[in-house]
Every structure is written in C-alpha cells, then in structure tokens.
Length: 478
Image (cartoon, rainbow, N blue to C red; front, top):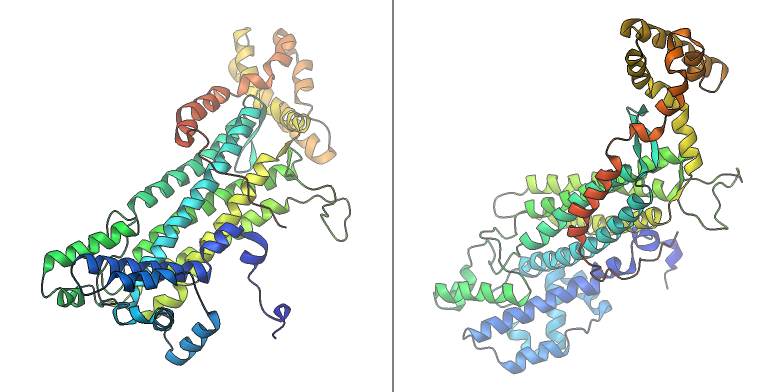
C-alpha cells in the first residue's frame, strides 16, 4: 500500500476549504451528476417516444450511487477516455440499460452540463458564505458607528473617519460581490442537449427528423436538472466565456477580501485592531512575544492565487478553436474548482476575523490625537479669522509652527507640540481657550455615523433580509 504521507496533498483540501465545498467537487459528486444526466436524458427520450423501457430507467436508478473506483481506474487506463469508462461501468452495473445509455449524446453532454450543475451549487454555497461575512461586517459597523479614527489617503494621515464607516467600505465591496453571485445563479444556462458539434443532428436522427421533439427533449432535460434554459447555440462545448464569467465573480470576491485583509494588517501594525487568536496560539518560533495577523495574511495569500487563476479561464476562452479543442479539459479540472475551494476558505477566514476582531479604542484615539493638531489647522485658521485676525498672517504662522512641530516629532520623537505652540503665539490669543474644542474628533467625522445607519438600513439589511439559514460557521482548521 502506498504511504499517503509520500504523496502531495492539496492544501486547499487538507488545510483551508470547508468539508462541504470539498465534497461538492469530489469525484463522487462530479460523476454523480453524470449519472443524473444520463438518467434524465433516457427518461425524456422515453417520454417522447423512443423505445426505452421504464425497467431500464429503474435499473439505472437502482445503481446510481454505486461506484467501483478500482474498476473505473482499470477502464480508463484501457479506454483512455474518462466518460466512456463511466459509460461502461454504469452499463456493467445495469446491463439491461446498457443499450440505451448515452443515446445520441456526446461526452460534453455530461461533462459540461455536470460542471454547470456543480458551479451553480457552489455559487449557492458562496452566497451563504458572503451573507455571513456581511452580517459580521454589519455588526462591526454598528460597534464602531461613531468611534472616530484616523483616516488615510496614500497611507498618509488624512481627515478622520469612524471605525464603522470603514467597515461599511469593506461591506460595500462584498455586497457588490453578493449581487453579482446572485445575478449569476439566476442567469446561468446549462449546455443542454446539443450533440457532437452543437447541431443536434444525432437527436434529430433518433426522432426521425422531428425538430419539435428535439426541442422538447432539450427543454425537458433542462427542467429536470433545474435550469430554466440552455445556451442558445454551442459547438461541442458551451462557450468557455461562461467559465470566465463565473471566474470574474470569484476574482471579485478575492479582491474584496484582499483589501479587507490588507487594511486589517495595516491597522494591526498601528495597534488599533487585532485579529482573534487562541490562548495557546504561537506567533513566531523564535520571537515568543509576537501576535501576527496570520489569518489576514492567509486571506491575502489565497486571494492572490484566485486572482492569478482567473487568468486561466480568460486564456482558455480565447484559445478555443472552431467547434472545440481539448486544451480546455485539463485546466477546467483545476482552475474553477480550486478557485471555488479557495474562495470558500477566504470567506470562512473573513467571517472569523471580522466576528472576532478586537478593537483598541484608546490606541485608536491616541493615534488620531497625535495627528489632530495638523488636521484641525483649517478650523483653527477660520476661528482666528472670526476673532478678528488677518487670514494670510494666521496662515503663515500656522505653516511655520506646523513645519517646526513636524521636525521636532520626526527628529526628536516628541509628542505633537503644534497646539502648545499655537497657544503660546500672541496671534492666537483670542482663541486660545477654544483650541481644545477645535480639536474634538467629533468635529471632523462629518456624516460618518449617519452614513453607517443609512448604508445598513437602506442597502445591506434589505439585501440580506432575515437570516436565511446560513447555518454554523465552518471549522477553521489552522
């Protein structure tokens, strides 16, 4: 027996993705869709008059969930064709149905339709994960609704915002992703029943030239597998632009998550937040004091992989020749399933981090107050003018004091001395008593608290609705 520890084990399966998403793309799940497709095709053909018996269909149903994986491996090694290996194996399990199995179909009838069935189910699972992340972000937005914090543009200190407002920025990106996933689920067509080059010639021959029956056959198969429509025209395969469209949605989620993870890593560096951690969690094998933002780093790492993998679907769609070419097959087995697994892990991590995020209000306030004297200079200038000062003279004095304060901070590590310098300047004597109130953080956050309320009430909550049974969060394994 081969030692399992001597083989490569996929990290997405072993470390990151949930058991639910992993099972969805398992061989049993994928090949189970093929058997469903063969059965519904035979049922629709029988209903439309082909000589297929109810007993033959029941024979297929009786062994639908029975797989001999060793026998399948033997058949594929012999036939060098995975679909035909499964046709033969299914026929061996139900010999009375063997003559009518895969009747008129090409391999892409099961591979393409089956993949789209799995992708639609996977998108449904991604939607559930997104809803959980958005509920966690809504909770964070409410916690920090009116908690002022230093804003950043170009990662340089800028006008204050609030923790809740920043959470809404992250939530808005994920909300756009949720809307796109829902659009895809509603829009997604199946391949349908199209034949070898998409002309439906084999089915037209089976029904003795009856075009109406061929159309009805496709409609019945689509309905049986839960799709409202099939793609209007195809070659042997559905257009691979559909895969690219799905991959774009997964890439969008990865983009949103990477920004969230990166922002939290920056704020963690500043000591304002800390991702959740266990009591015995180790941050470094050497530096025992460390608590690293490893979950956010993993979000960013997995997101980078999804962004790169999405290019494979674009390249595949661009490289298809005429009615089909097989250079899509190997990459299709990897790029989209693994991207779904990665996005599943990313969203599980994101929910865990946001739900357990630790805020440090005193550090947040300290970092803000260190910069507030600079950020308040316009307010101070206007107050001085209202008290009778000359605007240009006051502006120049503020500029000189600010430059001197910056130098003392950077060169000597002092606390911000700007307010003290302004208070000691006779030009600002008339407003000296006002200076503390002019640097109250609440003066600088604008409508941020109200924006939080409005975003949650008017946009996020209507999109989420009531708790739709997202269930418990998946286990975070490492």
